Length: 212
Length: 273
Image (cartoon, rainbow over all chains, first blue to last red; front, top):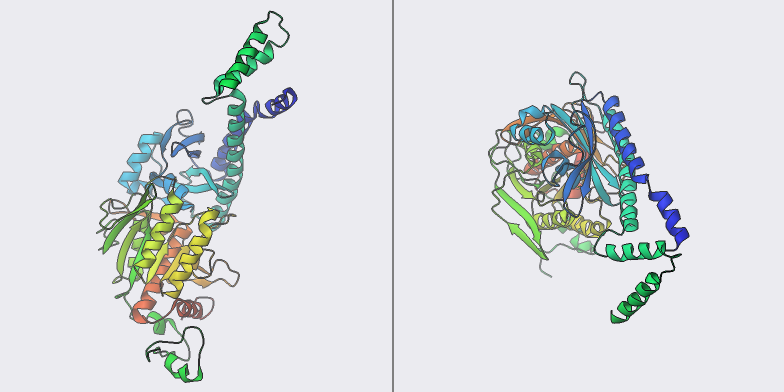
């Protein structure tokens, strides 16, 4: 990667993750406010681990939940992800199994939840949940549509966040070839030094290349 | 060609009499003609979902519970699955079908529970297996967005249609391409806001073909429980239940005829009479 290109990519990526995370946070904040709900959260699917990760949380649980993980096929969020179907459930307390599961993972037991898959192109990226909207109002299909609109926005934000993370990982040279990236970085920094160590290192690397 | 065989690719003049249908069609098709007095008895309904809790008060007996999984390249069919329902959703769908067709036979084919990865392939294999069993109705409140499964699902949906297995699938109310509900060989179902389980509407602007009860539905859930749920997932088994009633009274109806009858007695067509 040339210096210019590297600088351009870095300028685009540095800070982007924080920005996209702020966007996700803003989505759950607004979703919670519009539905007058106690809490709202976005889960990201970690495909490698086959787990769902709390990526943004508004309201109850917001301090402790971000980063927590659970298997991608359990609970309502898992079902919504795999089936690609949005669900609204009231009276969650009536299901003892569900309540216990949720209480354990979130620290509070919701009476109702809305869950919608976050779909982007062919991929299911995660799930958006809105917990405990007021019980005095009947649920309408207009709210379902509104939830779908939020989901679309959240899916785009999640996609951007994942792209930013991949770009950052590439720049940081993470993974088993990270050492190569670090060596290249060091050689780049020593470009103006004249003690000969850089030349020696380059000669060594040229030999290594032949060996490979 | 033996006398019994019906013409498949063309219709000669001599064969016209042989395709006379046994069904007596009334001058006006009404709900009473369509399913009046029917209980669902004799109709075999498969719920392709997260499993069904056998013996739930709102579900009753589940004839068979099957689980589909994939290990490596091998498809594993466990014909005596003991895991029950891993989510509650399949039990909810089964309860809705049972409430409409109390005497139908219910079979669970579980395609969920093994994680997200590979779930599209399991869905496909589960549907394939269910179609091979020749069930009368398959309820599918699931879909996949993976393009690579679209053509295979399309073939399966057509196979089901031609062998008289009626596939009833949840429509997606989100702006994404997903399958198999979009195919014309299945009945696709969205939700309306009414509360009558037999109230349903034909949609003159497809791909969603019918709208059934899907808002604030009291459904069965795991642990003998009940929940109030909303979603196309719960509208779909309403239509599957109605189809089970229709087939228990008129077992000779083909999917084409079933769709025609459903159209004729929809609330916005025959006025729900």
